[in-house]
Image (cartoon, rainbow, N blue to C red):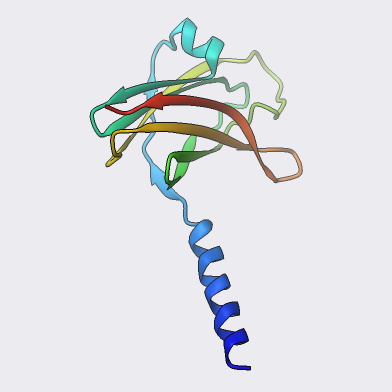
Length: 133
């Protein structure tokens, strides 16, 4: 009978760790490269790090922020602020940002960029793969 509460507690701790998003600084690039706008996500590997280039249209003029989770060979980047699904009045202004995630081991990584949909659920928007030297 004592084992069940311990398992529930451990399950709750694991679930809490899964929702731990670390902030990552986004540096705005002016003007956005055409190739970045076409791709949406570009990865540039560096020794022990990945530089993630993000490009999207931001007709609402919202400030872009990001947080990330890193588990094994998968890096999830949650983009808050402008959503590709959100529609605002005005001409879409393409913007490009760069984020650097360091402390990575040499191996192949998959980066998944998540955005919030109109029902406030996080959905995959773009993904890319790169090998860190």
